[in-house]
Image (cartoon, rainbow, N blue to C red; front, side, top):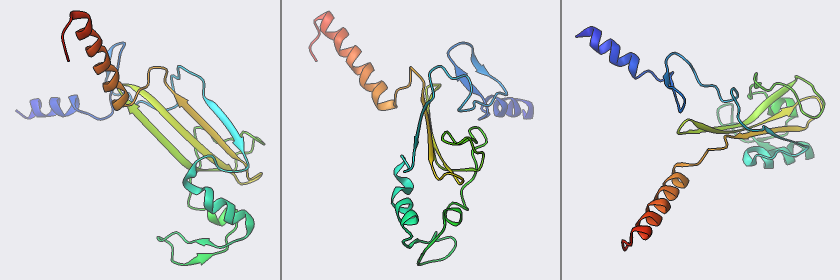
Length: 168
């Protein structure tokens, strides 16, 4: 009985990825930036492309006070770029700045979405040397959101019904 429970637990492990080619590859962890099937789009700018910190960045560069992170304190404070970005981590997968090549970067925005084995992700890092933002994004060619996928399935079903002469 314990052996069956252990076998079921291994079968349901979260570190497997289902692929179209061969089903489940046991023991493999799917990483967002490997086996890419399309081009990684890049963009460099003095302003952040991601909305998440765009207002604060303008205030930091103008020398205006910004709201302090609630986990650290409360109120407003004039901060340096280094002080403001101190709680961010470095992206070890894309550590370099696309503008100057520096490795002194911090990631402030990262989103990844996986749907039916396809992925979409975007990452933006701030270079602490040149103060430029490096944007990278990727979308698998077959990627669709669940809503887009369902809309496509319903459209095909309705077309099939029309071909058969069935009213909707």
